[in-house]
Structure formats: C-alpha cells, structure tokens
Image 1 (cartoon, rainbow, N blue to C red):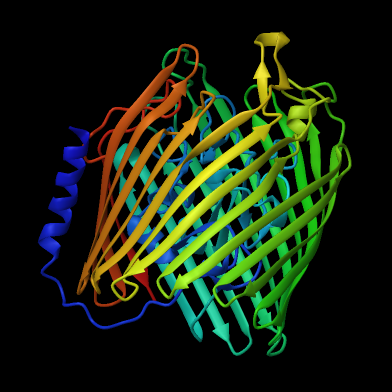
Image 2: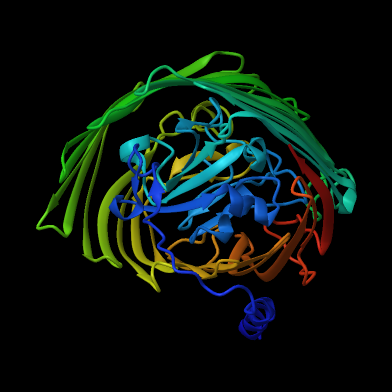
Length: 602
C-alpha cells in the first residue's frame, strides 16, 4: 500500500508538469567537487563517494537548517529530529547524523566542516547542528564513507563540508526574509554582499523561534555570520570569517517520562585562510578557532575550544598524475563542572601528516593511494591508509572501487565526564565500496549505484545504568548495503532527484533506517516555482529495550511566486499526509504544518 501511495504521489506531481517547455540541446559538464580531494576536480575523478547539493536546491526546499535538507539528496544519510525547529542537546537531543548506519547522538562519527574547518566541540566532540543556517550556504558536499585519510578523527563514517557564500556581483546586493507559521514559528533573515575590485564581503543575520509542538518545548536562536576576502594577486587570496550562534531552548522530556530541561548555549568560530592557485599547483593555509559556552538546567556549565592549523598543497605533476600533501595540528578541550576532573582544564592535541597520490594509466584507469599518520597525545600513533581504482569506460560510464580506513578517538567527555572511562581505545573501521556511475540522454539523466561493506572494531557504548554506567569498547560491528541516486533534468523547467538506500547491520542501530527512499520534483514556470518532496523511511529503530521501530511516509511542498523580479512570496507545507511518527523515543513529530513568508532582494 505504501509503494502504491508513493507512485501515485509521483504521478500526481509529475504528470501535470510535462507540458512545460521543450528540451533544448545542452551538455551538462562533469560536476566539480572539492571535499573528496582538497582541490577542485571532477566528481568522477574523486576516489570517494561524494554527494553535492547546491544552494538553489536547499532554498527550493525551504528548510531553515542545512542538515535537514540533505537527506533528500544524499543516499544513506539520516538526521534525527524531534521538534518543528531546533535539535536541542543532552538526553532526547537530536541532530545526530548517520551515514550508512554509522553515527550517534551526539554525532561524533561524522565530521562536519565549514569551508574545510572542523566544527566539533572541544569537550563533547560533536557539532551542534542548530548553528548551520541555509542562508549562509553556497554548496554542501558529503563524503559517504570514511574520510579519515584527509580529515582525521571524527570522519570515520564520512564528512559534511558546508561551503559558505561569498559576494559574486560587483557592488551591493542583499536579501531580507520574513516567515511565519504553525506553532507560532517565526523566521527572520538578512543577508548582504559587497564586491569591489579585489575586495568582497558577505554578512548574514538570522533569527528563528517557535513555541514548539508541546508545552515547554519552545526554542529560539540567533545566528550571525561575516566573511571578508581579498584577492592579493592573480594567484593568492585571503579570507577571514566569524560566526556566532546563541540559542535558548526548553525540553519537556519524553511523553512517558516528562522532565523539564533548559539549555542556554553560545557557539562561535573564526578562521583565516590564505589560498594559492598556480597552473600546476594549488593549496591553502588555514587557521581556525571554535569556542563555546554551555549552561544547562541540570547544573552542567562548561567552556570549550578547538584550535587548529592546517596546510596542504596539490601538485599536478603531469597530465596523468597528481599529489596532495598536507599537515595538521590541533588542540581541543575545555573545563566542565562535572565528572572525575571537574573544573580542571583538559586539553588533547593531535599532529598529523598525509599524502594522496593519483596516477592515470592505459588512458581509462586512475589509481589512488593515500596515507595519513596521526599522533595523538593520549593514544599514540594512528596509521590511516586508503586505496582506490577508477575506470572511465566511456564518456558516460565510470566504475570505481576503493578500500579505506576510518577511525575516531574518544572524546574528552567520554574519557572524563559522562559515564567516563579513561582506558577507552579509538574506534576503527575498514570500508570497501564499488560504484557504477552512468549518464544518459546527453548527461541529462545521471545515476550512481554503490555497494558497500564496513567492518569495524572497538565500538564505544555505554554499559550499565545509573552510577554503574561506564563507556566501554564493546567489540566489532559490520554494516553492508546498497545506495542508488539519480538526477534527471526532464525539461529546462522540470527536474527530478531521487535516492534509495538499504542497510543491513549485525547490531541493532538507533536512528539508522533499514530502507530509505527520497524523491524530489522541482518545476519552474516563469515566475512560479513548485518543489515537492517525498520521503519513505522503513525499519527505523527508536528504542532498543524493548525494541521499537518506526516506518512512515512524509510529503512536503513549497510554492513560491516571484513578483517584479525582487520580491518572492512563498508558502510551504510539511507532512502533508499528517503522519504520526517519532524519531527520538517519546518525542512525537509535528503533523501537517504550514509556513508562509516573503523574501525581498536588492
């Protein structure tokens, strides 16, 4: 019945639209990505499975937060949610990312980066998803599978690189957005860009708030972001940025065990990047600093930081070979008022060097080999290898195989604070994957089919309850599955994007669906844009003891009308089928809800 419903939805969405403009002759070039190689290259030449999502696609879906937009475009990717706005933290908190069933809440196994800078907290070791607002984003690239050879710890399951906007046009540009909807949900945004000759700047300010879908589940957040760049010469440029996110939220606890909880959090990051680009070489030197203050109603108070320096350079040795080499140094930690070392400054340092070499041979084959050596102040030396082989069988067909290692070092929180165990060992994993990339119809229809197998050891879990609870390395795990993704530009005005993922795991996994299907249709006719998306989730574990699973189908739609070229009116509806479901145990998700607003551009 569910499959029939999804087919009917797709037909209802697509059929009326096929009378659009005729297809024009065009050639879509191979997509350019950077996250899987540290330099701009064709997606087909990257040894990892990389999904790329443009700003336009995120804006068309109308989601306030970046992470909640990604499932529609990235197979095997799932983000936990629990409210109409705001992920929250601590018990019941959401925003945890799972890639191919590997991830956690809090999320410490998928690395989130902004312009290549890691974003995890110094104590808890995970990012806070509420800080990532759609209006700041130019593009998002997701590595599905271990990215540790390039990015180190926390990229064990993959990496999400959020590439931020910069001013593109000469002079001053800007946008202002106001939206209001169900549950007294309000969103305000202001962005402005400026470019003159070699100088460019981008500034964004956002505020979101909601009363929440239950009593005492209100949430509000204010975000600010500023980025300034200068082209020193035709080959050298410098960029500096800073962002702040201040949010306050209430959590009434799960329905079966109400427990009011309050958070007050300030997060920030600043970075300086100096980039170079020559005919046969390109690279960057980046300095970053993340910081935060957490004040929770259970008495927890902390200040943390994460500071690092990275430098890398790619050398295009010949037309058939290239070498990327880099070094990184980072120090992270902080002070908290609980745990075995309460109010003591705990700092951890890491020093790493890595190299990634690619060689083309026999015209159609490209071999990739990589190695990272990481020295941890507590765990010693970690060796991280990877190897891959790709073949361009034709202009429309690519095959790719890779084997890579991922790892994650225990966080300061796991070692010293909540259910601590200072004797923990790093988690480790070897991932094998085989991909077939195919294009049809003059590159208008593109598909990617991937098979993967992930073998891991030293999985960290909490064992026991109450005062006896302790984190332990509980042993091995194995995940395997299939991912399929497709994009079809049917008409210049109509595009379809879809993906399917199947996961088989030898352990019961929270927040990792066994089956997931996503389908998005976007149609533009003159001043009108209609975006409709459907998601079906099957076999999602929301509780382990006793075992409880969820299956649901969501349909969302957003309609926008452009007036006079500078004003856009929009209305979006979430959960059109009014599904009753939960992702976090005891936290029901909202039924059908509506938001409407206006965006003005200059």
